[in-house]
Image 1: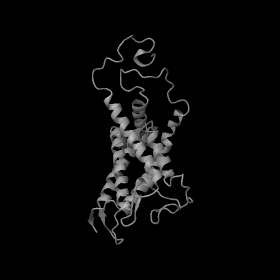
Image 2 (image 1 turned 180 degrees about the vertical axis):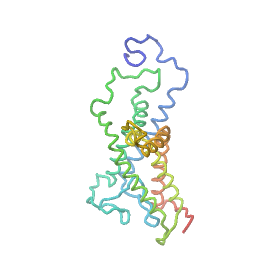
Image 3 (image 1 turned 120 degrees about the vertical axis):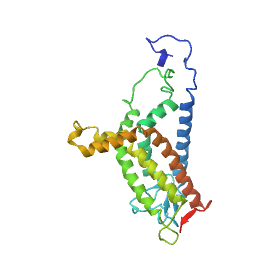
Image 4 (image 1 turned 60 degrees about the vertical axis):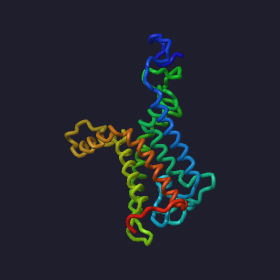
Length: 266
């Protein structure tokens, strides 16, 4: 091996690493979480059902916005500009491309993916199995630089999720009401916005190009706010994964009739 700590010019050490702690635990755990989410999301978008509860206006974020003629009645809050999808194309394909692109190109998930799936490196002072490093300058990794553009899409979808969450305050008679599903939807919404606003791209867009903060006091305040969130970006990234799964799984269960929504008002 000529990479990592055994690279040319480094001290020759027979042991793979001199670390005595459980350095493998973090990348293994993170990799398991990411793999589970990828498998779950893939299965769900190809199900093409159990994403809308008409009685309470619950729409899972995995299928929002639903803008195809294939969508079940009531779930298309913004019309159906797209035609009916073939059986081999998920009706949530647009949502999947934008949001998976945003998370897949995210700086935090890039680090987590490199360490967990590619062992590049798995941990500090642990050699990686790659003989050379080319960075993200070649295809397909060069596409990761599209992150800032996916960010704009994530903001748009976040606003759509706000609209969906407001509609979730609907009772069975069409009036005001809310249940456990509404609470779960709003908790997920807060986590999603925490993840989106704490993004490194958001921090750069808000104040990264400013040369004089004193000349832009309002943008400086936004930059300070986003900078504070940015320190917890990794936490929001992982927590929002679980809240998205919880929200989708709960709405799927109610939609399929496996459970009944616990109602608090109406």
